[in-house]
Amino acid sequence: MSGRSPASEAVTYGRYLRIDDLLSLQSPRPEIEHDEMLFIVIHQVYELWFKVLLHELDYCCVRLAQGDDARARHTLKRVLTILKVLVAQLDVLETMTPTEFLTFRERLESASGFQSDQFRQLEFVLGRKVRASVERFEPGSRARTELERRWDAPTLWDHFLAYLKGLGYELPVRALERDVTAPIEPDPEIQDVLLRIYRDDPATAELCERLVDLDEGIQEWRYRHLKMVERTIGSKAGTGGSAGSKYLGSTLHRPLFPDLWEIRSRL
Image (cartoon, rainbow, N blue to C red; front, top):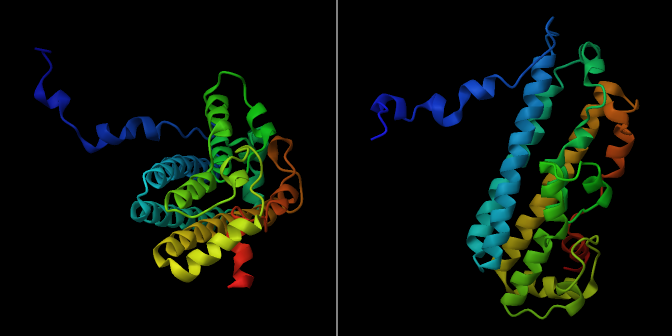
């Protein structure tokens, strides 16, 4: 017997969601710049959504490995819906004017969204791996450990190609045994396989389209994020020494899954 009363063990809304802990995580400066609360909450919510996206994409990879294309498609649909929420949150952030942001910008010091390890993890899962993103974090830290793990892990595209092989499609060995830390490059032989899928295999073609949706959703997020930064600080350098809008602009128009875009002109 624990001696604890039934009431102390009851699951309540507050205990289940740890509301008291959650509400203690926002710390605007003591004199309280009004708009800092909005800035903190939105970015904390982003990090929570990044956590969910990683959870869902990992699950999608597992479903592909098990040949469960229906569940993989459903999971990708959920991921895309979350991405739309992330884009919509920028509408809220853009209610803050440049002068309102300047009231607390100096407090950010070296802090920058560029340092979001979870967003870098998302990029790694989706095939865009940069070693500097790993080495930016202290050895042994949670962020470094997770990034190292994802650095060595197959990407979503690698899992997709393995799934196609499991269906009996003949893919080039170089694609199936590629260096998973290298960029995903267009491959004409893979494109030939994808063309056959689009013409003769509607179910798998639908899975391909969900990957295209994901690719487009990430590009939409990047574009809206760029415009939000330009609207707030123009072409100035970002906090933490980041290049700001210049860096964000360099990430646009770079598809995650180039083969799925290349075949459009061949269908």
